Length: 146
Image (cartoon, rainbow, N blue to C red):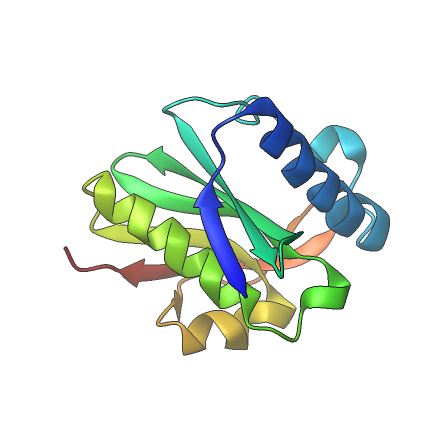
């Protein structure tokens, strides 16, 4: 069973950080000091979500609002849970938050290996490849309906 919800307390936020550290820092080699930033707190500027699979924390993501556009960030699913469609659940939840905030567009910096995944969810590639934290990325955009 999949359960995706907004993070509302520090304990949930610590779980999300542990997932991100496992994936981005340990698995992908992103420097620890680059993974965490000023948006990693509970605030109205940035909302975080946590997805559980069979009551186990399995993935996370966050959304910030930049010039009225929802920017999806730090989307990840633990390796042992990647076959259950949880990435799609995370994206859907973040898009719903964007709609709640009145955004008509969302964007993300997707790792190039995930471009096909995002395209299936309605995103379009909007940049050439660029390097972020040593990993090739592309800017992807999606119009969302209210």
